[in-house]
Amino acid sequence: MRIYLALFFSLVLTVASGQKKYVSVKKAMKLMGTAFEITVVAQNEDIGYINISEAVSEIERIEKMISSWNPDSETSLINKNAGIKPVKVSHELYALIERAQKISEITDGAFDITYASMDRVWKFDGSMEKMPTELEIQKSIEKIGYQKIRLDADAKTVFLTEKGMKIGFGAIGKGYAADKAKELLMSKQVKGGLINASGDLTTWGTKATGEKWMVGIANPLSKEKVFSWLPIIESAVATSGNYEKFVKFKGQKYSHIIDPRTGYPTKGIQSVSIFAKNAELCDAMATAVFVMGRDSGLHLINQIGGVEAVVVDSDNKLHKSSGIVFDNNQ
Image (cartoon, helix red, strand yellow):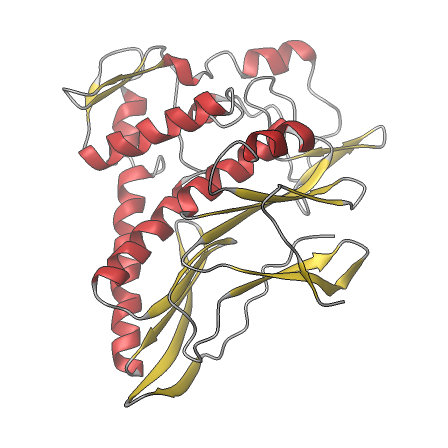
């Protein structure tokens, strides 16, 4: 089963509000190598599409900064100088890395942007015929470790202390980009909207109808039925799952989400959805809880104010943090 992020709205929906009319405009596209959908509530279609274009430009700006595929990005420059010298970066990237470090600390390394240093000994494209050896797995994580990132707050420099180290933002970048696009649109007085960064959702305002944005969670015993609806008001949600990318050896299922501390794929969880005020935190914590496991992950979430989680384990059982209240409609 999976958690379905079910959101229902028209491509262009006109609704009168007092003397004003608003339309809901949605556009789907590929950004940051993945599927994005941006919906805005605006005075008319033309303004709506202009707003979406501005959001796209902001997401592309973020991608240029954090992409490790772009040889000219600040991130690539940091990676190229690993073990050589500190690299001066923009205040924005420095702050993002600093926040990532704090998440690594509270999750005891379950979330770690130096995971990009990992040797790819696990493959989830169907080509693996046997498990990697213990030695291969241990060697694959030798250069991982958030503690090896040196930050200089005064000089705004980032230094990876070992040659071959790399940082990557695959587990936080989409959420950050969604947050920045939302921030831009709100600054332009866009009444409401939703940004879906391939399952990382952030919202503000309401739909053109005045209704709340809602997330539907599938019933663990029936994929076709919604177990409960949860509102995401001025908030965000991100989901990590192992539905499609996994391998099986001796009847054991291994997820594509790998624990950066051990080099082994995670087990025991099918999906994690995190609810919080910003998509960046949701994105990172969804990965972290997946790695930590159900009990440890939910224990941590219950200690963080303003963050909630829904976990579906490998037995299709649903578990939640203390602040989640289901509005069952079945």
